Length: 324
Image (cartoon, rainbow, N blue to C red; front, side):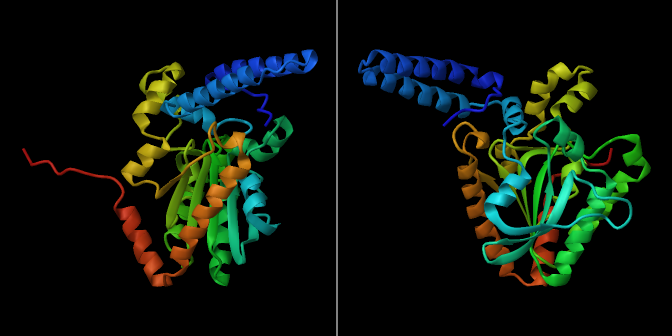
């Protein structure tokens, strides 16, 4: 399989081995020499190096993988998992936000409502999608569609992939924090099953605005955090160069989040990350969605609300100090 042209720093040793493999294969063809033993040895070394690298990623390296420009985005997963996706537009107040999309689709034979944050692949699309950073109208559109789903008894599937809500002056002028806050409240009250998957970046309130769901899943190399590592480093150390240290301290990776109870399941990725085998990543997500939806659909609306309440009440810890 051809590897993406874009390489992370951690992937460079793999690329060197692949170049050796390609050169040796070409030499074998040009000179009609059997070099199968040498080719097998390099292939074995390549696979072992890949395992060594991806089984020992630091939190900061996982953030880099989550941001890989070739990583599958929300619409890639929707296309792989669903049929008959019909996008619905607008918040009925201001305009249509292309960073946050939604619409009806079939997941297997089940009608569902899709809510998804979408990034762009190139400069033109990134401008259209606002680099995956929704504005207030995006969250209001999401809420409109969630209420529509509730009216027709449709489960809601949300795909989280944003560095955060757009922090520009125009976004603040249209009350982005209020739009997110309303979503947090209203999502706790939806009487239909809700299920979120963090496919890449899960940044701050921008992610949480569509993430207050019955179950929260996360891909192995995705992250979910109250702030980006760079933002945290700029505040605490006054230097964004401390982002790796911040990523370690924030406990923003999938394994930490599962241990802390913030997410319900970590979905394994193909060796080398989801961008190396999008079909396998989609198949793993389909299996997880199916299992969790089966469990949620078996519950009454009252049970869904009670369990959702208990889930979010159980997050976090506190200590009571004796009065002095």
